[in-house]
Length: 590
Image (cartoon, rainbow, N blue to C red):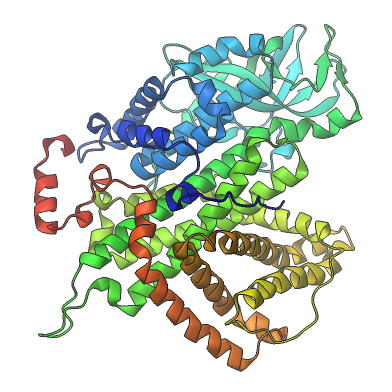
């Protein structure tokens, strides 16, 4: 569950970017095509249709959907730039690239996948995955949808109203290839657990397949999605459409045989393996929206003068509550970008069913996503009236953040589960003895982070001794605290490594570490790891560290790789009134 060491000689821009610069630049160009601008006159339905058209255009330009789905740096880049430049695409690319195409490319043989992947490859059909239900929500091991052996294939059914698939974006009538989760009921009537099956949910004309009923859900104010409820009534699925990942076989009599006991244990993790990739992709793209928001807000704050008196007109960036909030958020976002990139790198060569891999991504999601929402929200608020408009980008990112964070329910669920696993994993490591540390010393700061992690591990052990519900609920606060503490420690270690090469990262490291200690001073005081004098030292050094980070801001923001013209936010212009006038007069926006 650890992160990889750093590569010596990496530029600041390379450190913050994951994947090919050329591909990142290509995506910026493709996703800023004015033919797909959202206009004032578009209804929600028209925006949904526009998103599907833009997805097809994206696929046409960047090539094979399958190739992108299995090339993780490319996949993460598609998520990142879609979130920054074309927010309406996020619900579609997740289902199309990651969940459907990724599952078909990795969980079955090429001959079985070919008929479906061919249509997904050029977006003549749009991919989606159907897992969540009214009854089980995202606890999909408890889903009730059934796939029953019927003599040569499977019949998928919804046994009761609470088993209806809830939320997938399938309302727009376009051709659909879906990967659907269902409990396989074999020929003997035995429930063999959750498996994945491929089906054509809508035909080439967009009509629901026989046995499929699709009901589109209500208007959503924060994000444009054609969410629906899906019911199955003997949807026929071919035998070859079963995604077994070669873990089992089904004979002509409908009898399932596992390869071995290990295969049986890995089956559920295999079925949801692409969720692991998707969790990290969504965490990554929210971090991208946080970087974009802070870039826009900080650039605006550096230009905007604030008349305080007839003689004093300071820049907004010099006002303490603006500067301190945005620069602290910036440090946290850069730390999470570097941490997230390390997890992305480790994921590329990992077994997606391995416990450590799954838990590392769950931890990253919980560590990254709520902070991204907070950073986007703070950027919107500090921009005041300018932050309200889609033209300045930031307001639209809030909806993306909410959708991604709650896509599997509250992401704190994943954080608590991962924290509980982590508490067991680290149980043998003793907590350090109490003793006051010097927060002015970078080495002592690392020790303080480490002490918090292991102390929480020790305090959580009392709840791991009994398996009952009461203990499982009682451990959740400690599990969430441990998830954050562990990731923060890992991130700080990476910042220490990279800070030796980049002064900007050293500045980020100091703000990140000191603001974290400042946030948790009560905890450190009660655990006798800091005293009152140390708390005052933290506050003094944090003020200085923010000043240092402010000086490092220009090269840091430049390393984010944003193009002002492509972003097109009026607040990035040197002449704000002229920028707004030009935008309001642009016929493409109306």
